[in-house]
Length: 215
Image (cartoon, rainbow, N blue to C red):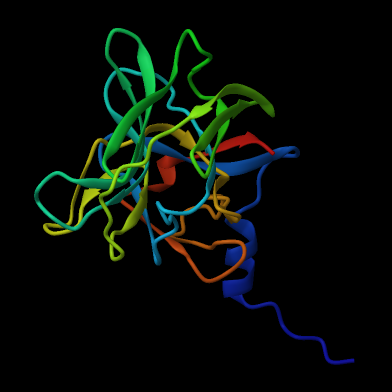
């Protein structure tokens, strides 16, 4: 039997993801400049949308969870899921430029918690711990841009390629329409998708931004 030598590269690849028992790595977005951009757009605003995500650690300002902006300077937005503070914390959804508040603190919005949102036809549901907490009819807008970028943790302007409204808090296991980004490959700028084919590129993260969380 042929025994292959263990190279330094293999050891380095294995060691970078070693954690304590029952723990795994996740990325703590800093609210300043860390972002993830997908190789390919992930959302069709005319079709069904199914997203799992974590809410921000607090609601001090605008925090973009996922966005897919129209490539103009006109301020149009094809898709955006964002949390922000007005009178109370609000989770806001934009589809085709149509802006709707879909979840408030009173309705069950909590910091650093995992949610699932589905939009099937015009029926929108928000889940918390697997239980539906919002269920109603959602109106989609008409703005469309087939070349818009999909970004995680920041809103983007496709024309001048700038980013703003950065997410603050730990993000992991983002799932969009059946594709999962675990965001667990520590210190790596390229985070793979499952199934493969739509990697996420992380910008502006350092080793200090990677934290251990419960597996």
